[in-house]
Length: 356
Image 1 (cartoon, rainbow, N blue to C red):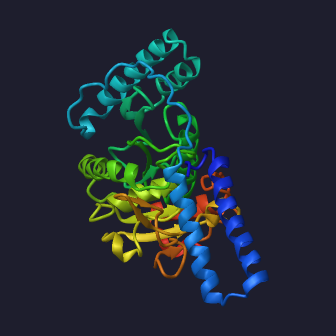
Image 2 (image 1 turned 180 degrees about the vertical axis):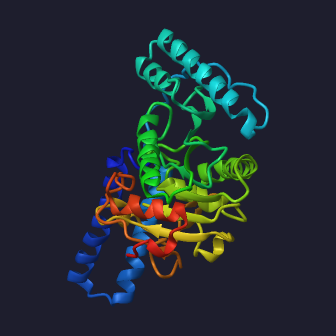
């Protein structure tokens, strides 16, 4: 359940197989025993739950890649408006050093990714190039911003694939700057603050990574409020598995709006169960394969498999908005209905959001 520009083919196949298998099982049963519709729904749900369970029990991911050397993160105090430039410079220096170490280690792909992060125009609140890596990037003038979007990515987002995440954040920032009324100062924060699961892995169908990530997201958002103007509005935009992270962190988060796009579920049965004062939005594009992911939640050996209620259904209770025909990687495509609506939500122009 990867990020907007991420790779999704493997999970998409799993979802299609699950749906197709369920359909096949129903067809065979109908031909032989003519079960009642209620029984067919029961067996379909049970089969989908079993397939989700298999995704966790059966190892799917390949061997872990060797650890990539990088310097430890810069030792910085709490970020304030006065120290933003210092933080940006320190993290660019760390990324440049990480690029040199990755090149010496024989990993030119990682070295190139680190060098891009170290470019003079880039602004990072945090950077850690070790392992898969973590990074929090700012687009815009955070110290003066009064409309802020925080993006939380899904699976397979790392330093190696960070360019895709940056492209999504940059597309949103560009749209915001074109839509913002005179005197409004938007900013975008790309928050890669957790170890995302692999799209094909034993962790992508469970809440484990999200539970580990949630405290860090809560802490970051509280610090963000202390860094930005008091009047600033904050929208938390969560894609794919990132919506599971946001669901786990949502309780009393200091945000005004929370948008779930391409979501497999949040782990909560309803928007009310997220326990947040934020407006809850949800959208799914017409070509998004995540529509075929079974919306079940099963407890297995102390692990929750699946993410429960579909956020775009009336049962969940979110404000469902139009995402056009976006596929799973297309929610931040320039000119798209989904990007326009995410910008409107960030700007607080909620009456202009087009509903699905």
